[in-house]
Image (cartoon, rainbow, N blue to C red; front, top):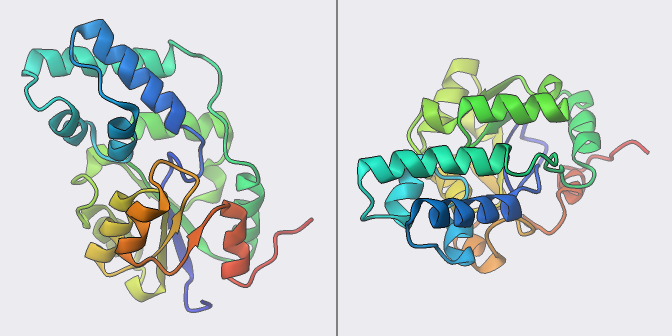
Length: 220
C-alpha cells in the first residue's frame, strides 16, 4: 500500500471515542424538546452525517422550530451537559505522530461543524498533525463525495494516492463516490456487516493496526 501519501480521517468514532456520548446527548435532547426519542441503533447509524441530514432521518416530521430547538438542546447536552473531555481511542496521537514523521499528508473529513472540530482539536492538541480539514457545514453531507473532492482539489492531491479511514458506511460510501480507496474501522458507530458491502481495502478492529497495513511501525 505504499502508493498512498495522503490519509484522510473521519473524526467521531474513528479517532475520538464519541459515539456513546452522541447517542446519549441526542436521546436526552429529543426527550427535552418533546420529540420521539430514537433508538440507540438509529442514532449510531446517523453519526457522521450533517445535522440537516440527521434531522431528516431521525425526525422527518419535525418542523423548523422543533429542529432549531433540538439543535440548540443537542449542542448544550453534548458540550455543557457533560463537561468530561471525550477521549481519543488509545494510541491515536502516537499513530498520527508516526504517520506525520513518515511524511504522510494527514487530513480530516468530518460530520462535525467547523466550530465543533476546532473545539475538539484544541482540547486534544491534535491540530498540529493535520494539514487540512473539511466539515459538514462546508460541503454536502456524507456520503456525497463533495468533501473529498474539495479537500483533494485545493491541496493538489491525486485521488489514487489518497486513503479514507472511517467507522461508518457513510465514510466508505463517500470515498467510493469520490474514487478514493478506503479502510473501515469496526470499533466505532457501524458494525462490520454495514462496512463490508462497501468493499474497503481492510476493516480494522484497532486503529493502531493501520501501521501494519501501511507497513509502518509506530515508535516505542
